[in-house]
Image (cartoon, rainbow, N blue to C red; front, side, top):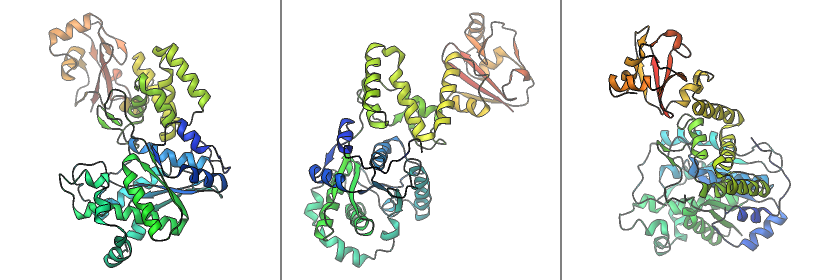
Length: 429
């Protein structure tokens, strides 16, 4: 954990969340505030295992759970071991592919591990819990499902929900149509078994959340509340959570720490203050300072640096921040010789890579061609003579230069740079 979790109740939590823009919709704010003032509230958010990792699109609801725990309440992270086998139609125009039980079980365990980075399961008074809805959905027989739960939903009610209505033109299977009922039952089960009275989720979950509240009311479960976080948008209209190489994952094996850090440091000036409020726990004073710095000296990009430090530290830890900053500085200066082998590979994993076997040495000119750093020997000569070519950060202007075993970093890598930003990694075997 990067921040300690306090057991003291913070009655200003909703005001804090509203300042950060983290509340999109909420049922009965006054009633929820009164409850938060008096007692520790148990709340939950669900995460379906539709892949082997969460991505940054999941961060806001995860951080909402963390905000509540920091304010003294008890979060439950629900992994959809059961609903993950069905598929949520929310926010989709087509049917999801159904995964095998073994696949969903494996992904469920991976997601549990990731969620444990953000929540504290150790405090005596406001510890977090991790549950899988397969524990109760897996043993639910069809007769009980239809008689005791399904009877509380009318088809007209379900058709009116956006998650269903938006799918009618393209078709929706009974399997996905029933997802709303299963999620509603999750809320009812968590309320009866764990005293959970608040469900939070993304804005696309509003229909499912309110359906759960209706089910709780019909089944006599008592007072409960719902809240959604906003859909994260970028000022340029592009989808948040995507980089040039695809989704930005919380698993460092799918998105490297350096690439993760770079995603945040490349945030547009028009988005960075909003993202500091969304994705960090910096206080209002610090955010105001960064906003003033951005207005006065935008070229320094201090707000972006702080955003990258904070989110990378939260997801991957402080050592990862130091490594990402070291790699960033190395690539900016061109001096890659101080990087460890792991850092070097991470820094250049998205750069063109060439593997060369069985050569003790190779002419730089030939290496430029092999690595596709130059389109022809004539162009390669011009680049070398003009000082545009660097070997492991050192400019080389000698056309007759040979790259020998001594020029290999960690005994097997040579880094070529052409111009300021064009890197090429050569691995010798």
